[in-house]
Amino acid sequence: MHKGSKKYFGQKSFSEVAMDEYLGSLGLYRKMTAKDASCLFRAVSEQLFTSQIHHAEVRKACVSFMRQQQSRFESYVEGSFEKYLERLGDPKVSLI
Image (cartoon, rainbow, N blue to C red; front, side, top):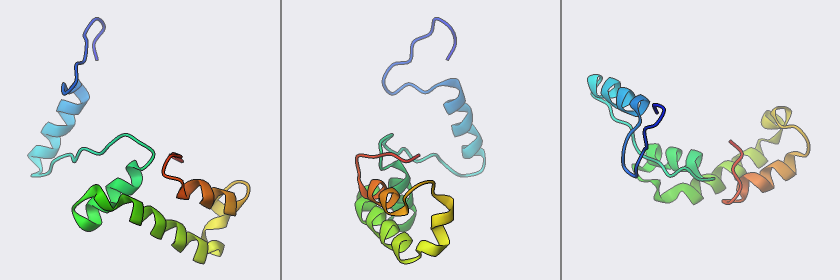
């Protein structure tokens, strides 16, 4: 945003407009996702189910899969793997 300009609800920044134009030239569009602690799971839900409404189930399935496959993931996590999964399972905690 340029100095002195104000962005109002619903207005797009220059970079958002540029991104939308670029995607449009490819026949694509940017899907809006809530900017919250579940944004990653909302995006995955959108891709799997064409709806973000299943984000809680996606989160739960991810945590369950990671728990079952601990040996594949634990080397990427600093500290306690179980505590990481507890935080990942909490919809109020953003890990991104």
